[in-house]
Image 1 (cartoon, one colour):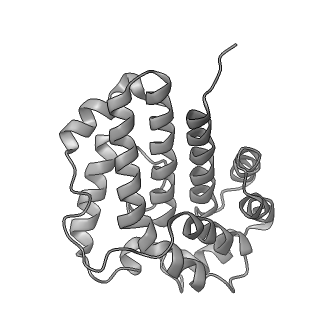
Image 2 (spheres, helix red, strand yellow):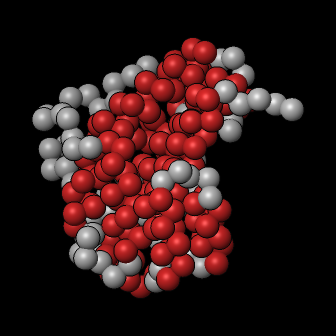
Image 3 (cartoon, rainbow, N blue to C red):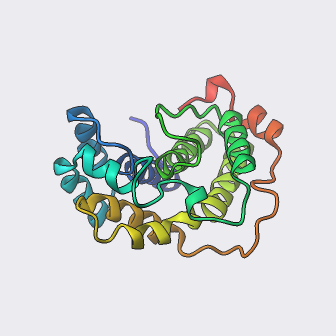
Length: 215
């Protein structure tokens, strides 16, 4: 019987947490989407987020689009909550980082959509867990550092403002998902934007993006 150490178990739980946050911030896609949310809710140890997943059973695509869809009243993208950065530059650098870790979101949304960014955090946590379980200490550390910076420089930009903006929307699971993100990251800690995610992408790709390390 394989024994999972406490750190790896925590990483797997965190991966499920962020994957659920991302899923709840996606456009509702019928029974399959709801089943995924229910399954992930059983993996997270957060009552509020699990309750949000249950509330998602009543999610409506039309209400979602009216709230944070492309023409919705609230922006579902990082660029909509950070007016200090160039949108083209942000998208380009996000795509470069997704590519370095072989992250390929199955979504019609742009790279800076909140659901995609939350999904990337969950993916990184899963990558780190697999690296640690396989004894790939350096890859695990690089992935952990990337996760911390991504949360600080990206997710923290939108989590609080989005949670506040969504507090009165018809589908409560949206606000709950944004609040779940905010509980983990808190308010933004940077006052001006320097080089976004200024890390060694080639090194990340070599250590953490190899095909045989896919979670």
